[in-house]
Image (cartoon, rainbow, N blue to C red; front, side, top):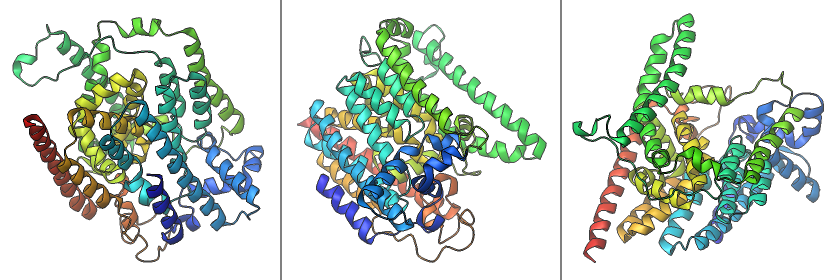
Length: 491
């Protein structure tokens, strides 16, 4: 596995393309490169926003790499530094993945399926080497390391990685805090939930149904608040119809995510022990560690950043995108399409086997359950790199679920073929020079060669071609799983 990652990574570094935007740095990468050159001056001069103060660690590492080797802080050297950092992150990530597989006695099929889902998808084999000046590679390593430390029950190291990782990826502090609090929590039984399928299921006397309706009502109330605020603002600009079109386009995907969340966390709400009673059993020291995981980075962000510098993103902005995704009107199912394009066919398998994946996450521990619960709504944003923090947990749950039920050879072969197709190592992005503003004409070629993989900027031709292909891939995987289960049952 390490050899495969090294060959692909070194090949990309030596022969791969570089994004033309920002002189090879990309969009956000311009700021990360500036941090490499003059982070100290940016802090002292009050140029650093709170958003970018949460992303400084990769730039500091690259700065140290260049300083130790005596290399100039040229554009090419900074890009090369981020490429090497991404490659090292993947190599260490492979080691961590195999360590987790050993801890959970994962067999060869599940081990390789998980490896491919993490390191052979479009995100790892193509995107992050084309647009290298990002924090994403190190963020994936942090997420994997946090999951390993959770499995090994090592709270102090988990706290340290959470604090360090908070300077790589914004949600790391929340992930670490819930993992620390949940370190010793387990569901007392194999509780499960069901979704209403017939008219007879819709009875308020049923305990499951009452809880389900309350859960849906809470989700609907939260969404309604965002919708009303957005429509009030849209009324002033005369864009109510446009905003409603965006909301209705995303609504089917939002319903799927709400149902998936119910399957994931419903067993906790319906457990014989109330959630508050379980939390009462958490040792005080774990609450203190969780508080430190959240508080220490926040204090540092306040000291490093200038509150008067505007942030390009934030929690409220992301929440708005969850309900009103940047996909335009009419592009239904875009969250699942863009997630599959970035993370590979494992996304389809996770969806097809969601109930089993959720059950395996419960067995691992409630920490990964809560991490995935935090991450699931971010799928709706349609910029699927937002899923990065929860992706290792989903992959581990999928590998365990498929191995428990048996992974047939047809399914493995089909998954391998789809993974190779998804990686798109052979695809040429720079088919022509990029002209004009880096933010203009993203849905037009040649820029669309890159952006056809991203929901917010995917043009209609790319959408109409790729959606049927992804749906066909899901259908083939479903058939392969059914046939495999039938054959295993006969055996």
